[in-house]
Every structure is written in C-alpha cells, then in structure tokens.
Length: 350
Image (cartoon, rainbow, N blue to C red; front, side, top):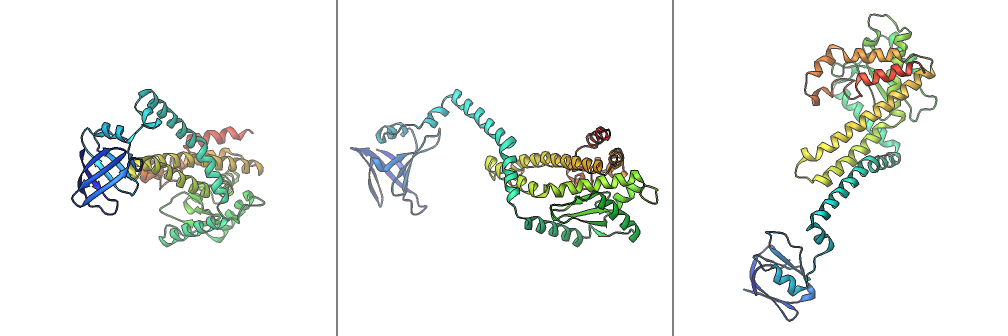
C-alpha cells in the first residue's frame, strides 16, 4: 500500500488516497473514494526520472504516486518497457536514432519539400493567382506606394514596344505592363501573380540615363528586365513560393513547437531565402533565352545590374539593417549582382 493522488477523470479535483495492489486487483481508497480495478484495467505509464509514477485506469481515472514505488507498481501490474523505452536507455541506440532523424530531416528538406511544393502549386487554381495579384496591386495603390507614371504617352508607347518584343506567343496567363511612379520602390520591377508587371519610372530613367530615347543597348536592358519578370509569371513563382513558405513554416512549427515564434521562424526564413534566390536564377535564365531569341545581347543587362548595385540608394541600403534594406532595393531579393553579371557575360557569346 502506498499514498497516491487520485483524479477521477470527471473533474480537476485532487483526492488523496491509498493505493494497494494485491490478488490481481488495484484498490484505491480514500475519503469518499472506493474503487477496485482488475489489474488488466490499470496501465502504468512510461517512467521519467524525478516524475511521479502514473497509473491510468480504464474509466479515465488516474493515480499519481511519488517516491520509490514505481518498481513495486511495475512488478504488480506486469509492466514491461517498450522497445523504444529500452532503446533510449542506451546511448548507442539514442545516437543512431538522432542520426536517422537528421537524415530524414535532410531528405525532407532537399527532396520532400520541393516535390510537395510543386505538387501543391500545380493544383492551386488560377483564381488564386488572380486574387493574390489584385489584392497586392490594390494594396500598393491604396497606400500610394504606386502612383501614376510621369512619362509622356510617347515614352510609354516606346516601353510597350519593347515589351511586345519579349512577350511569349502563348503566355500562361494574360500579361499586362503597368508603368508607375514610386518613391518607395525606386528603380524596380516586379511581377504580380495575376500576370501584371509593374515597372517604375526610376528603373526606366536609370536605363535611359541622359539619352532621349531607347538605343540598342537601352532596349536590351529594358527587354531583359521585362523578360525576367515574365519568367516569374510563366513559371508561376508566386504560387510556388506560397506553397513552399507554408510547408516550411508548418515543418518548423512541428519541430520547434509554438514556444518561440522567433526560433521556429528561423528555418522557414532561411528556406524561403534560398528558394527565392533559386527562382530569381530561373527568371534570369528565362530572360537570357528571351534576349537570344530576339537577337539582343546580354552584356547591356549585365551593365544595368552593375549600375543598380552602385546607385546612391543601393549604397545607402547596404549600411541599413538587412531586414530593412531587403524591402527597398531591386537587387536585395535577387542573387548577388556579381553572380548575375558573370552569368550574363558568360551567356553573351552563346
């Protein structure tokens, strides 16, 4: 017989009782409590060092026993440790389990998540892209991050002509180009999921420099930027990013729990950054193919990336915290300019 704490499974009230095991039964007795359970209806939980021994009963009740009574209860109830409990008691088995866990996680990140991402993205209806694109554009306009372009109709027509040269013959979704003024975005271009491409006045001004109109080099630069954004739309990068980010966040939460959003969010951020860079590279390669198809050189686009890297705005953001500068520059969410320039220069002779 040993002292125990009894919970009847119906309320949170604690009862102090005496627990006795004999003749194939478990007897629980205390003030207002009298229960007799066959041993087959009592289950001893896995032991933990320093924690009370817990006996679960078939009616939902349980007893918690402190002290050194666990061994006696185990013998009386015929408790036998499961293979997992026995394995974790040996350091060699625990080490092997840890290595196996790391291998499974690595395989999930390297192969499982990408495969699941592509499967989910392929099954997302086009209405999701349309809804996301309209929502983002409406938000940018509502906050006046995007305002009407200051260019003349003649200049806008010249930009549309360059756009027409790199437009795919059979786009996945209807693609439209919006030229907008934006002090917040600076020299930038972005593709929205619904097929809208936003090109800022500052990007066009950077391309033109002091020239009054588009020469061959300026045309190649603008065509490369627009083709890059078309590549994002054609390869449905927004839907893939949404699926990948959601899966990675869910995996992080499963591994780290909800105890710390900061800790659980780190793997998701790292995976998203890596995935974003891979998609930017895909869009760059799409732009290279589009330029080659039009007989345009890739070297001018490399020159543009160099200029983007060395604008006063870009130099200023490099002294800012990373989280702030990422949202301000065209180059911040893309692979490094040196990497992109090298890729474009290598493609020049092909």
